[in-house]
Length: 635
Image 1 (tube, one colour):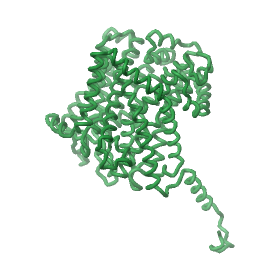
Image 2: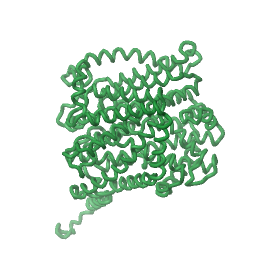
Image 3: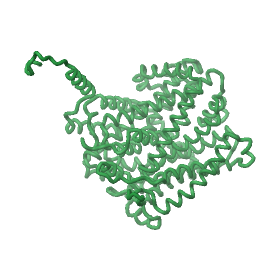
Image 4: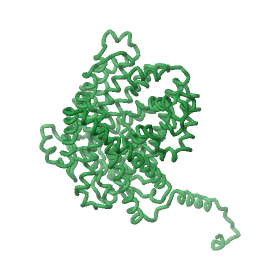
């Protein structure tokens, strides 16, 4: 979908169809936006005009048209020699656009029958079995879950700690100087864009809901590692400590240990952009089509589809639960289904527009909104409590990091820590492959610092401010957030609304909160759609528009089936259980990468060595000249 600007610069996304679509979307977005903003800030005036389900329709129209318009804006194509790396990297996640009447034949011809057919068949079978025998299905999945998370929970704890330690070694060690793609490779995106793309795709909307809720739940039921009295000041510190632990460096390291081997073997060894590329040291590039390589890619697609689809379903339910709490508007089953349909339209259009257009822009909006809400909360919330208790929790987190990482403390650790680690590993294939696609031209050290360090700093800051504000209001008696959550069956989706009610500019906070949910899930679902389309397409071919549409609609269909047929928790548990195999795959990948680095990447300086060399060079530069000494005497 390319055209020419008047100055001769080729553009992507400037076809007649897209121009007409943008013209149609703009007035709808403006009209719906006026109604939505007026409804938030002048509810008594607008409520008589739009009420009940109409608010859901108007809100969806606003978000869908606004984000779709943003995604469909044209962008200049790279044409200069200096943009060669951009063209190369974009090819890895390129979509082969075409006229819709010619979608079906290229789509069928390009699909890999194994990586396309098996995940779809398994997902359909799981939903069918759940429909026919729900009790037996839930019991079987529950038994597997108890075995993996209970008896083998220690494997997840050890694996995540090893991943963190490996990341730390890469930062300070000599392999951190390895540049992905060779010494002359240049990054595709600026650093802020690089960070925004990965952060917004890898975290999804869960961080928005759990920001006010996780620390609150730990405050009510303290972690056994510390053993503080429930709802005490000490429990508040410990609650924030565990929120940092579950969303900090330990959480992001699985993405890195999957993504970095993929990136290195793709850019430096010629492997195809597949999750199975991390097995290159064992199978070779030509052996990645073996049954083992196919199995890894199939598991990656299933984990991504199951995890993201159930997330879309749960986000829809939670979104409407929050609206019901705040405005007393119930929707029955129609509301979540309609919301899933609206979200599907948004993320399919975003995915079809590509990484360089829609996803890049919406990722920027996501990070901007995320930072804005964090700053506003710090400005208008209980700042003294946040800084005092949050500072104590940060110290606690650093001091107890290793003991917490190895603590096997009964059912609490199984339900929280082990489940979280498996969840992050189950998302690691799609997030890791996306990280790999973005990282050409970056050094290993930069990739680690970004994918684990910068992202962790952002999430820990969010939980410090959002979680600290929630605990400050609850502990100080300014809001009964626990009571509100209990009234809605313990749903974490409700926690943010009583927090905002207790703050100035509550309507603005609620509007930004709901917007943040939509943009986060849009980015994650759009990226996952592209990733599974890449994995399901035959090697050496780019996914077509038909692939994007098919996988996007499939994700929406699975989310809708979860809502209509039930079994969302079972499907999510099954998807999360795929984190177990990827723990094993990640450990083998790190061993293979380390051996390859050891053999092939000598001559790089460690970080301390680089600092020492820089200091020595500076000292030599600053030595005073002695005119009484000859050049050969200066040493």
